Amino acid sequence: MKNFIIRTITGIIFVAVLVSAIYFHSYYFLVVFGLITGLTLWEFYGLTKHYEKANIERFISSAGGAYLFIATFAYANALTDDQVFLPYIAYLIYVFVAGLYHKDNNPINNWALTLLAQIYCAAPFAILNFLMAIPNTPGEIVYFPYFALSIFIFVWLNDTGAYLIGSLFGRRKLFERISPNKSWEGFFGGLLFAAGASQVFAWFHPHIGWTLWLGLAVTVVIAGTWGDLVESLIKRTLGVKDSGNLLPGHGGLLDRFDSVLLAIPAAYLFLRLFIIQS
Image (cartoon, rainbow, N blue to C red; front, side, top):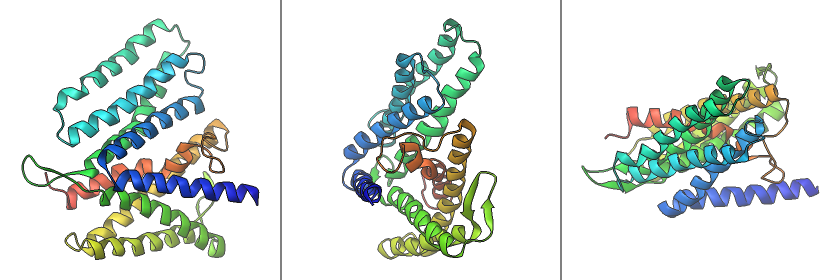
């Protein structure tokens, strides 16, 4: 009972912080998600035991990914030009050069883990900036939080629907080798919940069209399910239950953002192909 209460309180605070960061102000979004980007990287490097004897390197790479998010925010909001990415390019060069001096037994593994985290953790949050800052007219950027907000809501409702329907009716395993508890019934239950939410967004923003909102929801659910499975495979490979313990009752940040890390890039592809025009 105590664990349930802790989990509930943590979940409410977590959702409130994220929704507020996305909805209320772009600079609040910058601070919250910049911090999240850095912390997910720090967690990933700790989870893989990467940099375990060199916390300064772990900090540099976590800060490097956080800088990528900040730089992308500035660029997407037309606050600066593409030169803002030069320090990140310098960081990437540093990663390879530093490997020459560390005298590790497996430098290829170290390089791979360092850059994998940048792609897996930092890049999706950086892409999220382009869903918040939408080109309106040439030279004008509009702050539009609803695409980003919809991604998180679709993921949360998908998780809720998959759990409820899967618990009641789940029979056919979705991906037993990686996640034995997931079922096809749960998958379609979660998809139904997200599809329903998509029509609420369509009601508030009819200029986009209900079919496009539905398509976005389907895209997020499919990619989010893969994202959940990817993190499950990472944890199964490493032999751990949770990615961390930062969120009481919920594990680590990667446990909470696993679905989103693939849903964001997939949603961006969908939106750029069908909705957002440069």
